[in-house]
Length: 312
Ligand code: AMP
Image (cartoon, rainbow, N blue to C red; front, side, top):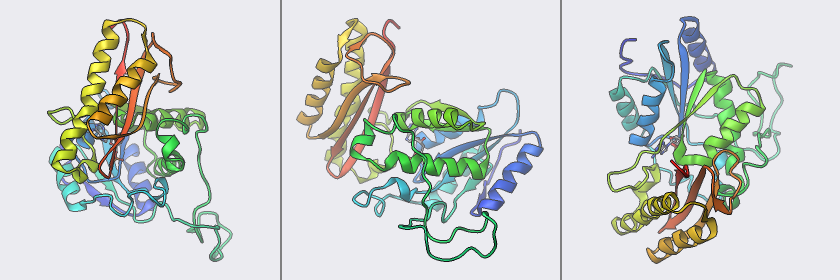
């Protein structure tokens, strides 16, 4: 397929759905990459995964840029979440692999009681009066890890990703393993609700020194960024040790990581070692696991993880 060049920017939901349906009628596989913008190489690697998502068949790649208010608690950083739409569009155009950018102004409307006016006709498709009151919850996977300190986060993610799926109607959607719990939760939601969408998990992209790329890294001072390297270093050390010593005890490893992060000046939110698909905590590293970490450096909460396949 020819290079995509400048992606078409679509803001309207009906126009987005019509665009996707046209692409599918042309025999293309529609691949969605959901993002909150302020794009970096990590996001662009998802675009590259998307471009290669369909062996042989032509793809139509849609990147959505939408800062989802419903996943932020009132105390969190929605107001300061970085954005640069013009820069994002330039970066996406430079890949030559993106065909459309979906940038809806109002995918989710915050509301308290769902009231606020009468629909003009009896059609449920009339633009909703009042706020949003329907939620998707993945009941077990949304608790623990990031769900403990961010209790409304995954409800917001699952609901808005479902809306994106309903509007864009993709055949494939690509998520980063950087947000490991989010990726697993979306896989589970798609399975449980019979979305006819293949979910691909794309590997974490890191800076040369190991820091996992994140839109929030821009808020780190130089010193905080230096201290935050303790996250990836402690994860790599833990994996090396787990591969060397079979059946390592999780608790000891979690304590060591937490101590390293604290000594570096971080404030640990959690360190957990869990099964890769179920995210159930393990006592012993005797099966494929993932170590997940969240820690604050200054005012920035960072997450990272590393998969371990014992015996590999
Ligand atoms: P965000 O814009 O932070 O909501 O992220 C949008 C998508 O990009 C999510 O699926 C993330 O997991 C993914 N992503 C963010 N950072 C990275 C990274 N460093 N490597 C790979 N994927 C990433």
